[in-house]
Amino acid sequence: MAHVLLIEGFSRALVYFRPPLIRALQRAGHTVTVATDLEQGDGVAEAMGEMDVTCEHLPIARNRIRPFGDLLLIWHMRRLMRRTKPEVLLTWTIKPNIYGPIAGRLAGIPRIGIVVCGLGRLLLGREARAGIGWWLLRRGSRRADRIFVQNSDDQQSLQSHGVMAGGTRAIMTAGCGVDLDAFPSLPLPDRPVVLMLGRLLASKGVHEYLDAAAVVRQQRPDVVFELAGLLETGNDAVSEVRIQAAVAQGDVRYLGFLKDQDLVREAICRSCLYVLPSWHEGTPHSTLEAMSMGRAIVTTDARGCRETVQEGVNGRLVPIRNAPALAEAILDMLADSSRLAKMGAASRAMAESKFDADEVAATIMREMGL
Image (cartoon, rainbow, N blue to C red; front, side, top):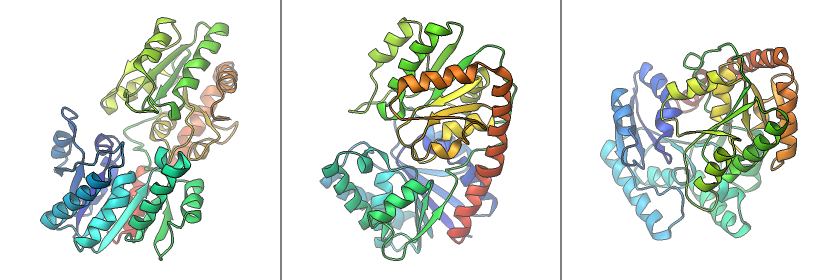
């Protein structure tokens, strides 16, 4: 049996997205240690402890590139790896994916895999900054044995930027998958409630969602729009002032940050339609959860998002950064409740056939020799 180290840049992802993989590893008899940039009061270490998983802190500083700080991060990673002595390393998010394999090889870890959950703002952003990001990712990926990607657009981008060079094998997975038992299919509510979950970033389409809500409610004042997510900082963040202005106008209800699965399930259960107007994703986990619970989807025809919708079968695709088109699609979907129910059933069937988290975990374990 192996000792597996998981390094995650976003601490709460260990609680929200990684439990199916962790449980699968444990069922197979493997020991799991996780490392992340722990935040005060995030409850991650406690949640991991309840799963019999050791949780270590790493100063990842996920929102910025710092030459000296990132060199120091490699040193911290290598020291952690030499102390914990894992046989397998798996990493998520940009900094662990870049620096984790470098530290892993320095520490003598025999099997290393990186999981690309979307390319993110660094690699898809301004040309000079993106060039630095791609250069760094090429250096890190060449130390990995496997690269797990979540959509064909990202795979093509990785290939065109030379990330696959050097014999590293690329494996396609259906996102991180969704726990079908934790998110069971439930009947639609009688009231028209539209929901969006996600980090409150412009690139997640929050501005378009708020603008579309205002347009829809001019024609359908009975429709309730709910928004839940974590307030962020940085250039891409949507300000709390913007959110509160929409709340004051009666366009949306802001639910705050939903800190556990029970609250997420309750929010999806209240909704009849799930909306994610994101500009780019790996495979959006919130959409998979809504699909698993039998909700129709409106999302963008963008990388990672389009994989979750069969047009006219379980939802609608709209152009990115287009609030009028989003509003039109929402109005069309809400016009026929029986069609919403049929599309919701199709979403659940798609989640079962394509996005089962246990199948994703099995793929990762098989490819990593676990």
